Amino acid sequence: MKTLCLYYTRTGTTKEIMENIAKLLDADVAEYTDGKDRSGFFGYLGACFATVKNTKVELKGDIDLAAYDRVIIGMPIWAEGPSAPGRAFIKAYADKLPDNVVYVIARMGTRDYSKKIKAMDKLLGKPSSGQISIRTKDNDYLKDAADFAKTL
Ligand SMILES: Cc1cc2nc3c(=O)[nH]c(=O)nc-3n(C[C@H](O)[C@H](O)[C@H](O)COP(=O)(O)O)c2cc1C
Image 1 (cartoon, rainbow, N blue to C red):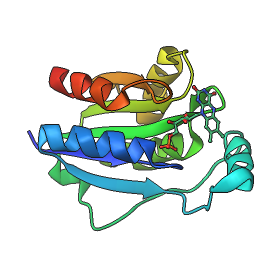
Image 2 (image 1 turned 30 degrees about the horizontal axis):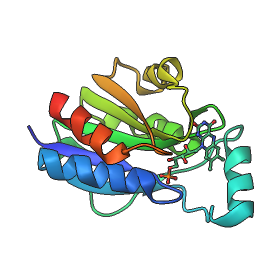
Image 3 (image 1 turned 180 degrees about the horizontal axis):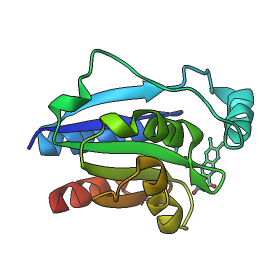
Image 4 (image 1 turned 180 degrees about the vertical axis):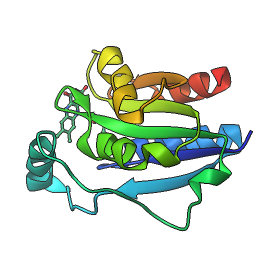
């Protein structure tokens, strides 16, 4: 099965997780972004505001989504739900994604947000094939990512 691992990241953690999953699954990796500089305190603030606005995202590089049987979409949690760029990506690219879509979500806290993650299927327009949210603080998140990859 040809798999593509995608990520949006603000501070690099989701990228690290998706690169590790890609290595285990022998998959390709690509980044999507809304191109906004969200570094530092003002970047954080902008990210908070982004959760209530739409943001326009683009897939970086020359990626043909039609060439993949499965796409694993990585994104962080922002303000108690999947981050704005992640949701915007699914909305914008839903009709180009294969039937097999999996969500991998990075979060800091103890809540797993499983219902809000599953609710992205509304944007996707079809049921996703799987999901995980991984705690990135005080946790061996790469082990959790590897354990999940083994189930795919
Ligand atoms: C604006 C903002 C809001 C966040 N809100 C939450 C939250 O509600 N719950 C949570 O568990 N983590 C929250 N986080 C933490 C991130 O989801 C977590 O640190 C994640 O690992 C960051 O991934 P990244 O390094 O790929 O950007 C928030 C981060 C940002 C920037």
